[in-house]
Amino acid sequence: MTHPPTGPGPHGGALTGVKVLDLSRVLAGPYCAQMLADHGADVIKVEPPAGDETRGWGPPFVAPDTSAYYQNLNRGKKNIVVDLSLPEGRDILDTLLRDADVLVENFKAGTLAKWGYPDEELRRRFPALVHCRVTGFGTDGPLGGQPGYDAVLQAYGGLMSVNGEADGPPLRVGVPVVDQVTGILAFSGILLALYERHRSGLGQLVDCTLLDTVVSLLHPHSASWLADDSVPRRTGSAHPSIAPYDAFAAADGPLFVAVGNDRQFGALTEVLEVPALARDPRFRTNPDRVRHQQELRAALEKAIAARPRAELTALLTARGIPASPVHDVAEALTAPQVRHRGLVVEDGDYRGIASPVSLSRTPASVRAEVRSAGADTREVLAARGFDQEAIEGAVGRGAVRSAGTGGEA
Image (tube, rainbow, N blue to C red; front, side, top):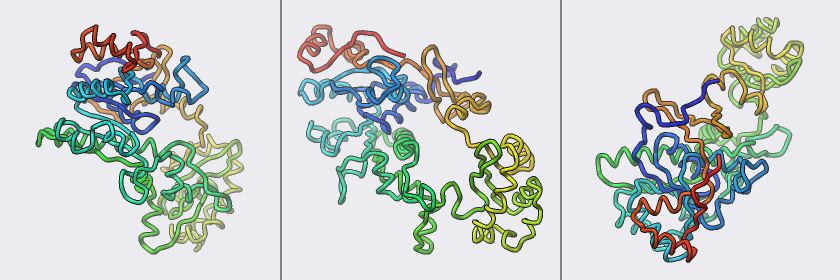
C-alpha cells in the first residue's frame, strides 16, 4: 500500500516557514488549516477552555477527548488553550499575532472587534497578516452575523432543493460538502493572498462564507435558471442535461453509467446488446434522450439488470464509457485506485485521508499526530519569549491551560 510521506519531504513542504494561527472550530476553518499544515506550514491551533466542540462529536473516539471527527481535521497542528475572554489571554494572542503570517478564524461577527481587534485595527497593527475569516452568511447585509451550519446553508442556498428523488422530499447531501469546499476555498484564498504579499508586502482579508460556497456549487442548475428562469427540479441520480447519466440496478448491486456523447451512447447499446436504441428517433442525440429520459431509462433497465456490475463496468470502460459500481464508504476507501493514489493515510494508530492537493517536487507530508487540548501551551509560549514564571502565572490564573507534553494519535 502506498501513502503520502508522514514526515518532511526532501525539499520541505511548499509552505515551510509560513506561520499560521488557527483560532477556528468545527469544520471549514480547521480543514483549511490542516491543509496548510500538510503542506509544511507551522500551524498552532488555539482552542478555548471548553475546547473545539467536535472533540465530542462521536462515537467513534480515538482517545478520551478526541473523536475521529476531530482527528481528521486537526492533524499536524500544535495545540494551545487560551481563554480569550480574559485580558491576559488577549495579551497572549497579541504576542502570537506578532509572529504569525496567517490567522484563520470563524468567530461570530463582532467577536474580534469586542476583544479589541476590529478589521482596521488588525490591518494597522499587523499589516503583513493574511486574515482568513470564515462565516455562514458574512458580517453584513440582511443575514450578516447569523450563524451558519452546513445543512442550513444547503437549505438556504438551494442545494437541498435539487438533491433527492423527483417524487421525494428535498434531501441534505450526505457529506458536509459546503463546509469542506469552503475550507478548500479558504486554503486557496490564503495562497492567493500570500502570493500577492510578495509583491506588496501587505496582507489582506480573505473573506469566505458558506453562502458564497453553496451558491457557487449550484452549477448547472444555476446556469439553467439564469438562462430561462426555469426552476430546476430534483432528478435523483440522473442529470438534468445529459442522458443516460444515472444509477441503474445491475444483477448484484447499483451501477452508475455516464454517457456524455452520442458515440458513447452507440457503444452502450452495443455492449447491452440493444443496438436498435441508437437508431430510435427518440434517442439519436443527447437533447432527444433528455426529452425522452424516462422511456430511455425503462429501455435500459432490463438489459442492465441481467448482468453483474463488475462485468458491465469492465465492458463499458473498455469501450470508453465512464461507469462504476456504486461503492459504499468501505468499498471506496479500500478500492485499488484509491490505495494506489495514497488517499488513505495509515501511520501507527492514525488513519486518515490524505491532502487532495498533490505537488510533484514539494508533496504534502502528513504529520499524523493529533495533539490533546493544551499539549503544546508551555512550548509555544516559551518559543515566543515568555519566561517560565510568566507561563506558570498564566496557567495559574486560567489565562491558558496546559496538558503537559503528551498528545494522541
